[in-house]
Every structure is written in C-alpha cells, then in structure tokens.
Length: 367
Image: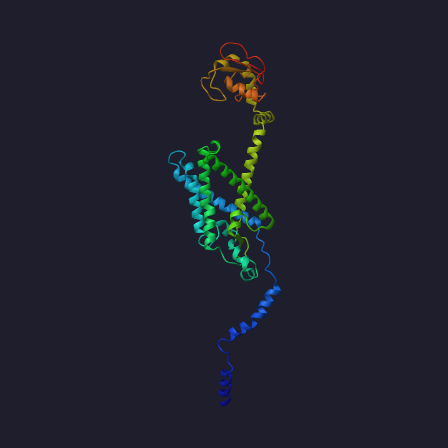
C-alpha cells in the first residue's frame, strides 16, 4: 500500500502544467517557420479552362431557360411588349441568380456543378503561403465590396448599357449634326465599345495562356475560379450538352449548305432513279394522248392551289393547267421541271384560252 501511494504521489507531481502545449508550440515556432521557408512557394494552381468555359455555358443556358419561361407570361399582352421589356427581364433574372448564388457566398449554378468556387485572389496574393494550403485551392471567398462590384457588372451595368444603346439607335444620335451632345455621346459610345472589345480580346488571350480569369470583370474584381474540393471527381454528365451542341452545329451547317444545293434537281434525279409503278407508266402515254379531255377537266394550279388563275396556261405535253407565274418561275429555275401530277417533263406551255404556244424554250426563253 505504501508503494502504491508513493507511486501515485510521484505521478501527480510529474504531470505537465496546463499551458505546456502553448510553451511547446512557441518553442517550435522557429523550426516550423524554417520548414515553411524551405518548402518554397505553394504549388501552382491549374484549373481546367474547359471546366471554366463549360460553367459559363451552363449559366448562359440556365439564363436562357428562365428567360423563355418568364417570356411566356407576356404571351397574352400586346404584341411586342415582351421585346420592349427584354432588357428589364434579363436584368431581373441576372440579379435573381446572382443573389441566390454569389451574393450568399456560393458559386453560380454552373460552377457548382463543375466543382468550382470564387476565391478572393487579392487576399491570396498577400498571404499565399498561409491561405492556399498544401493543395493550392484554399483561400477566402469574395469580400462584400467584391460581391457588390461583381453584381453591378453582371446585371446592372449590362442593363444600363443596353438601354443607352437602344435609346441612341431610336433617337438617331449617329445622324445628329456635328458639335451636338448627341453626336458626341454617340462617338463616346462607339469608343467605349471598341475599348471594351479590345480589352476583352486581350483578357481572352491571357486566359488561354494562363487559365486564371475567364472574363474581364472577374480580372478587375480579383474573383478567380478554383476547385471547391481538390480531390473530387467530376460527376456531371455532358451527354445532353454534347447532343445539343451536335444538333446545333448540324443545323447551322445545313442552313449554310441548303442555299447551295439545288433541291429540285436532286428530287428529279431521285424520281428518275427510283422505279415508277406500272400504273403510272401506263397512265403517262394515256395522259399525253387524251389532250382534249385533260384540257376540259382543268382544275386548280398544282403548284399554288389557286382555283381561278388570273393568267392560266397549259403545260405541254401533260396538258395540266397552271398559273403562268408559277409555271414560268419553276421552269426557269429548273430546266428539267417535272409535272407534279404525272411526272412528265414540261417542254412548253400555251395559253388556256386561245391557241398560241408561248415562244421560246420554257427553261430560259422569253415568252
């Protein structure tokens, strides 16, 4: 018993004081600082440029969907009312999205989906070693002045600029006399547009080289997109976005190539290539032979559907009645125009009343 009591008494007497850890931390502080200096600067942060641009595209798609849904509220108003209020609607939606995301300390919806957040780069530049951490993605969020400036540049400034440009165009400021304030304001607007366009182009080049700020406003504010979590896999699926991009590019390519393609010529070639039914082959000579019956049973124009053409002509040799303008325009555009009723090539035309054929070739001659 005496040994146990002596051991417990010696254990209590050897217990460290309550502030021992503080003393140890203060003693090890020089060594910790020396180790930090030996590690050098924090590792460079590389955020995928594609992720930042995809986040911008997703935010734009979300804004377009919201604007489309909000525009449906004006379907029953007077025509053109939604177009007049388009700048206001866009500004309200931008403020709504900004207030529910960046203003409360979060990123935009597109950035959230891609594991991105805004970081105060001005504060990080002053205390980089202490704030970014070993992964390089640390650092404080945007300060209140930064969020205010970013909100003004995101929603308020574009709205004011859009209204100013619309007022200038409607008031013909560019056509005003030299020396007036309207002409001076118009020149100032054009100069500002050129300066902003040039600055945006320089910022885009810097973004492609360094990958830090995707827009000029973010560079001025010091709001940089960084990873929200350093070790997080990308969980978003781009199948729908890729499908939409493919269809959009395909539709643009078709709109570009369609005017260069002669659809009528291709259709005629396809009709010649494909086999015709036996009854149509047998009906073609019969239609050409029964000229009087076909002329008597004149119906509406096969091209425009008019029951009473102002200037009626008969196509030869099929002898169907057309409007002169319809048949002339189609035969001039296509020298091998086929009658849509029986598939025969229109070689000439004559007036429905009278008996003089139109002189010259149907394709390019003068009637």
